[in-house]
Amino acid sequence: MSTQTSARESVPTPVPAHQVHADAGLTPHASTSGRADRTVTTRTRPGGVVLIAVLAWIGAVAETLSGILVLTGILNPVNVSTETAWIAIVVGVGSFVISFFLFTGSNVARILMTISFVVSLLTSIFAVITHPADFVGLIASGLGAVIGLALLYTRRANAYFAR
Image 1: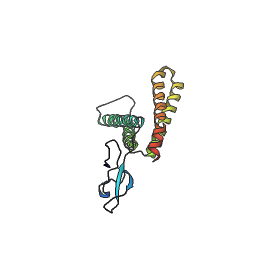
Image 2: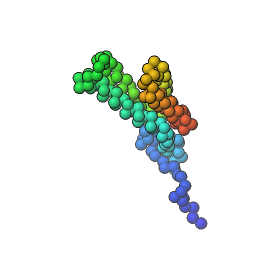
Image 3: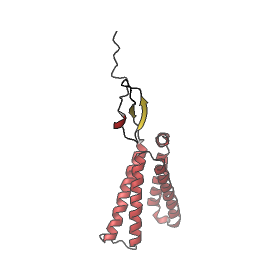
Image 4: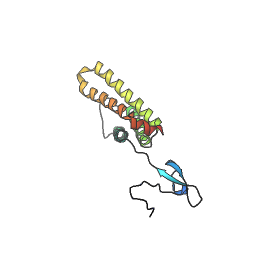
């Protein structure tokens, strides 16, 4: 009888330690060569986390770009100062960085994004109370924050950020 491995079986492929990135998930693997090889294991990013990170990235680019356009004079909105434009650029760059750290599974990025969603939700609630005529856009903004919070704390997202 032959002891042949079927194509369906999952057999880890040894990767020499010098070829493995430091941030990759690793598990030790016994090697027949006598040296310590490692097997790279992968984590699956939840779709909700990817969606939030991509939307945060797009929003960050738009916010940074709008600040730059105001500073250069290409956009000239009413009642927008240069200080406001600089704040938009700083917030945009910060959001850009946070969105990329969401892709890496950083729990700090998730906490910062949670704070952002909570502030957005509270702002929407306050604005609906003070400006009820504009309620449609404000409710949509608040609903987006609630959906974002829900996606950041699903079972799969919790497992992804727990590592």
